[in-house]
Image 1 (spheres, rainbow over the protein chains, first blue to last red):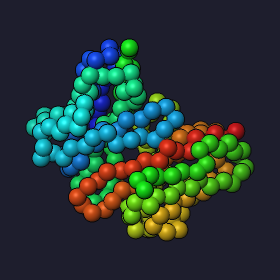
Image 2 (image 1 turned 90 degrees about the vertical axis):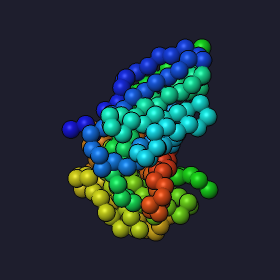
Image 3 (image 1 turned 45 degrees about the vertical axis):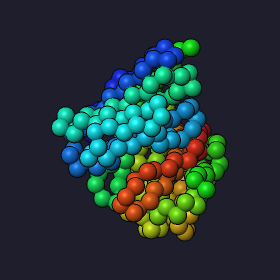
Length: 113
Length: 114
């Protein structure tokens, strides 16, 4: 059972465009939703994260939109740059101070110059 | 220091070898994790250590043996691995203060079993 569904699998965006990646979840016990960016040969790096009591969080060019009733959240990358080309994973974690991060399957983003 | 350091970066081992992967963090994080990542797949949890005690073992084969000697170090001992165990092995750590849940990942060890 895939607990966090991520789409699209791959995305090509022109430089300066907006990249949008979507995730959906089923389990309402999740209380933390991070996005990770991973470059080839590197470990995932935390990009931005949100708690379910917030509908939107913005950090620089990166914004998370969170829809608790629809159990969906998305990552928007504004003014996308070639350096943003990477694989992006959404994730979710159960409530409590310790637990597993449940990852989506990932989205490979390519930003064309 | 806001890093998780993993060594070695690359490892090639035979199926009869014994090797160890090492992970170190100095952020005061009391939870540490081993993840396995196959190509083009998300990371999959293997083990969780909380306050130096093993708290989660995701049904990992016994040829993988974790060890947490102290709050800053995490090892993964490897023995009699199979070629299908070739993957990127990631270490991560996190705080347990109930306020923030950020997981910091290392760059991983690229393991090839021949």
